[in-house]
Amino acid sequence: MDDIGFVWDVREKQFEEKLGQLRIFKEMNGHIDPRSMNGQLALWVRKRENQYRKYLDAAATSIDEETLSGILPEDRRIALENVGFYRGMFDEPRARLVKNHRATWEERFEELKGYNAENGHCVVPKNYGPLGSWVRAQRHLMKEKETEKGAVSSSFESGGQLSKDRVDRLERLGFVWDVHQWQWNQTYHELLQYRDEHNDTNVPMSYGSLGLWVFNQRAHYNSYRKGNKSHMTPARLELLRNIGFEFDLGKKISSAADERWQMKLDELKRYKEKWGTFNVKQRHDPTLYNWGGHLKKCYRAKLQGKKSSLSKEREDALRTIGFLDDMA
Image 1 (cartoon, one colour):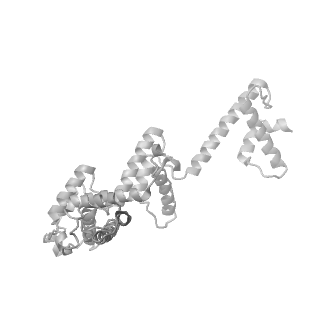
Image 2 (cartoon, one colour; image 1 turned 180 degrees about the vertical axis):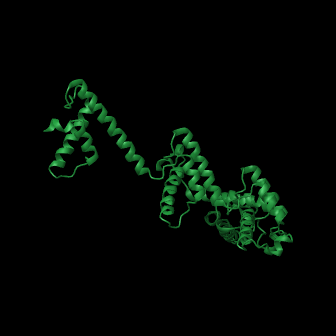
Image 3 (cartoon, rainbow, N blue to C red; image 1 turned 135 degrees about the vertical axis):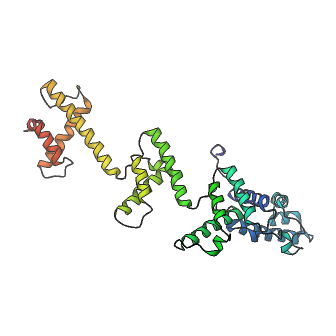
């Protein structure tokens, strides 16, 4: 089980993951105050603070080590203290635990440059602490500007929170204003790689996230074609069509089936030319023998008014070469 990465202790794994996030937060911000954190990490730190406080209160009494370990196991206590928890932390006003400093735009921009250098893009996750919040704020400010229908606010022109100079600097760094479009573009390039390897764009669902994305593009296209609300846009549609994307896979499957049927019909005609009959002998060609037998079965079912997979077009093709004459 260990060889396949089976997790024996889920709670321990979750503890290690959150502890790792807290280490990163401290490295970036110089403190571990949950008031400056976002979402689940802040909640986790507050719970650990309560647990640590209970441990300290109990340790101040004559309680035994086993009971103390039940409140907070020693290995976890040491891990928390290594990241910044300490015995006197609750004796000080909370304000002293946080630097009396709010990072400036320039400081956050420098952080973003570092993130970009390390990760190759500026799409910072929303749960990435203050930098993630700052990146989202820049997008929000730009969206507000764009909703003004072209009118530029005085704060923007006068070098307010998001001046033209700041927009230019962000864009030179590769800042992504539309995360959804960026993600679409990334997956589109994955599809290009798949096409180069497999000579088509029909990614199966079993292929993982790319298969699901391809399935969604077809669903979005169907909504778009019907005039309904859709994530499909004319620009995306053109990009997909340019690489031979199959929007209606049903037609392709039908076309391939027709092609295979025609190939079998040609084999049948060659057999008649060689042997003078459409009654294929099994010893001559087992596959063609079975196919011919299937055709006869479908035709007889049709004559009896039963359900049959033999279409009118295929019946006419068989009649044209004389296959049905041998059944008279």
